[in-house]
View 1 (tube, rainbow, N blue to C red):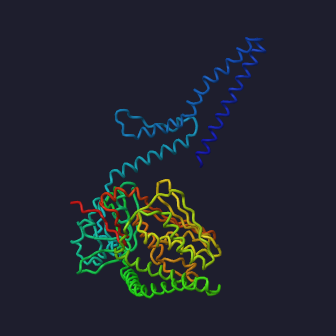
View 2: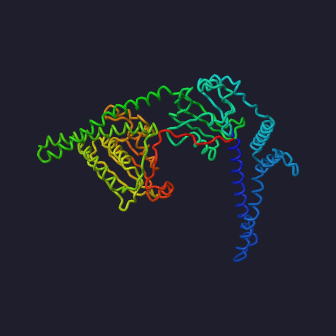
View 3: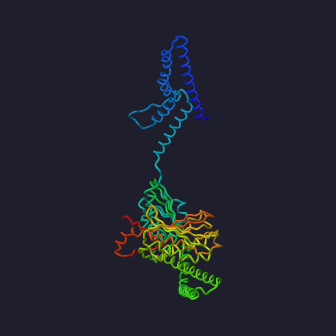
Length: 512
């Protein structure tokens, strides 16, 4: 039976009865003073006010005591099971409730049941899990490691021993960071994630791709994906679990492919430079002498040469990023001039596609600390993508302004095909290309990966916003040169040197 609905109906009935009684008393008072006592004037009004005043005084007090009696009995049941020896409360009798006896009895019974369960649970000590004897943990084909709060290794399954080519005694008891020298393809490393979740969360999951395990010459290098689970205050003192997903063969093939391609395209630089020189010489020599069709040929040759140069630079720079060999020299530069130079450089390639480049630069934009060649490559990559994916749109807009945080922000906006939401998170991944447009639109899948590496090395951020059928906006931020003054003073130099890291190490030190 639904005790709540029955209880609600009983309360409603009693409130209705109290209101009826109150109105009947008022009518009786009126009949008495007018028909029996024959009072008039001021005496009549005074006599009629007596009953309402008494009702306002007594009725709330009496009705509250009456209607809250079931609640009082439930509270007494809760206090009865509380461990307060100084002021013990006797067990209430549910039958003493003037109404709602079934609900009161049911709730009191559940309170007593919960108290019994809590008492039994408190007396039962959790049994520690022996992972060494755990069939599932040792049968797991993936390497599994568990850590305590100090990142010391509590357990490593058999797959871990085989993967690291170490005995269990050489793993268990060691500090995770001292045993495994891992490098990550971004600044979000395992130890920075763990330090953050320790401060902010009770449980958390994390995952990383293309992690590199640096090993000695006697053991082969490992490349893998990493997944971790964190659980603070675990009763078994197992705070973190780490699982390795080996992709050494696949990732090494990717790296070898980049190295081979970089070696191959490096040989293109000399003939490409020669080709661009001849095209520029022809443009100067035949300026104004060619018919429109020949001029169009010259435009397309020059644009193609620029595109091929950008392709070669991207390949070589990606190889440098992955090998930690791309070094940037940051100097003070006029950002408005750089944006205009990049737009002018890309205007020819846009013109071949019938696209107009528009740019809007906020007045008095501050100077920035950048490596001019590398940051031009970022703008060129973003504009080149905008040209490729403009579809039928004939306009691309480049804008620069100062953000509320004081960063210099540049946005390249097109009005073309747009990007599906489900693939946007992969756009800055090496080799990634949208499968919807892969057959129709050429590319290597390296431009955005490289752009992110360069912008990050400059201390900025890069982002994307898009909607299918309406276009995309790629933006990035740079630090104004004035904010780099302290770093410049520390370097005692007129320039700042930074590396576009391909691999970031765990920085946590082993705590002895």
